[in-house]
Length: 306
Ligand code: GLU
Image (tube, rainbow, N blue to C red; front, side, top):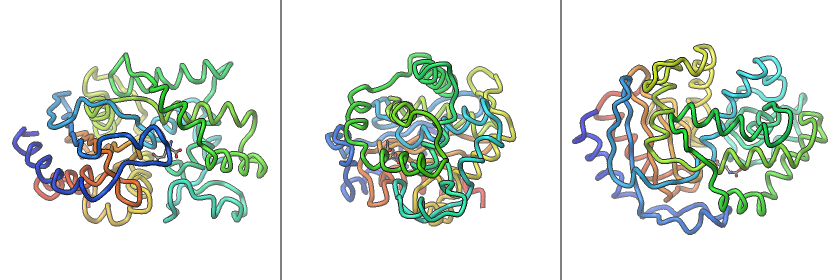
């Protein structure tokens, strides 16, 4: 993508960052500088272009839900994973418990909300918790093309010390028979995935792999099976942007996933993987500057799939 276009998107996005604020329910995230904004774009040949605070490190948060889902599907197959989670949007906030106790089959609605992602993480296999963590980090390194990608342990501790809502969610699912085994172990793995520290460049490579039908644009290796790519991209469209997913589909129209760390990944299928970072969030948990930059690129480059 032309540098001029990326720079223009950044300039446009910067006008909006003052209207939001960083997530504060995870104490470690509250101290992030809300004026930061960055973007990176990776094309299908692996060429990266970027602008703004694109090298700043931030935690993936809910963007890691996509990685967890892909790994769980590869390890277990579809039947096991979808015996624990559905494929329908909720229209509720990402950490809602409202519907969890009212379902006939007790399954959380989809893998992009906390309950669904925790259920998915509970299926990630390994002989020990340490092995499950190592396999997950390793897989995230492959998908981002960054072999030194690692966990931000300050954010991890901040999350696990304050993650009472997620504890409520997992124990509710444990009592309903969705979760098996040790809840604290599953939560530790979930928090670890959320706390993976990355840059826009790392996530642009991951988004480009999804946009390139599962083939890494850097190495040419198939990292995700085509069936899984199709499923994941469709879930990103219907559920990837919290309870703003419907409006986002009409304004931007690219499979995307947001995280409360301020990141968003977006797939211009067959063209680009885009990653934005801006910790100033709106009241749904989406990065305000990130949304505006994606709107700008979608409008000016005709990137909507619709
Ligand atoms: N770690 C966050 C949580 O569990 C992730 C939320 C998000 O990014 O949507 O609440």
